[in-house]
Length: 215
Image (cartoon, rainbow, N blue to C red; front, side):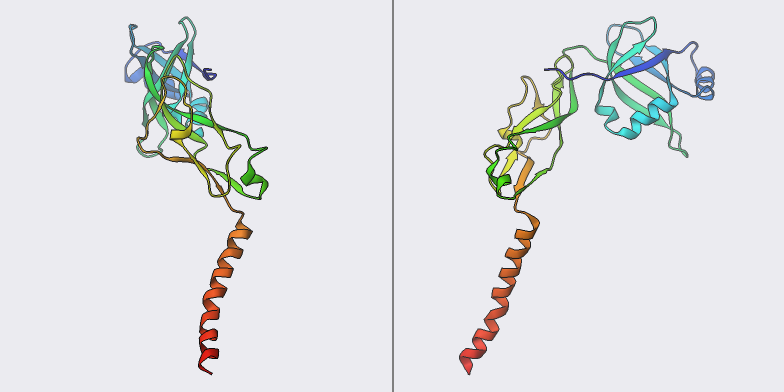
């Protein structure tokens, strides 16, 4: 099932060159360009406040957007470059690339957990740690999953789930070659501390036992 692609509303920029770009910045906009595909490059402006909010939210360059520009058909785009002010580190220009539905792209996909109501390890007091709440996958632009699912219904304390045990959507694959851990079920902190104390105590009793034996 494809996930909902967020909209990104832009305006077509009239005029080109440094003069038009400077005017856009004075008007509270960030100039940009949309390129690629079978269409001519389209100069655009994006409201500065909208763009800075999305940049600060993270994952901007790995997020697929549905770009809406009045007078043009909606198009799926992904950011390819953000130019920033050398001193203020604020965006001054942005490049987007158009994508076909068959284009392969890298995106971070959310991880959904099921089976937590019956997991034996959790019933024994274990703690589930979601090491990777998102996993970067190579997916097609026309078939983006809104999440991948991990089933923890049979997990015991000490178990973990790796990417190789997850059923990925057709055509999707991880960007990392190794079999990395997504989630693990650990003993509760109190139990772990008690075990460590017991081990320390056993080691500490040894000298006294030796001393009693010498007497």
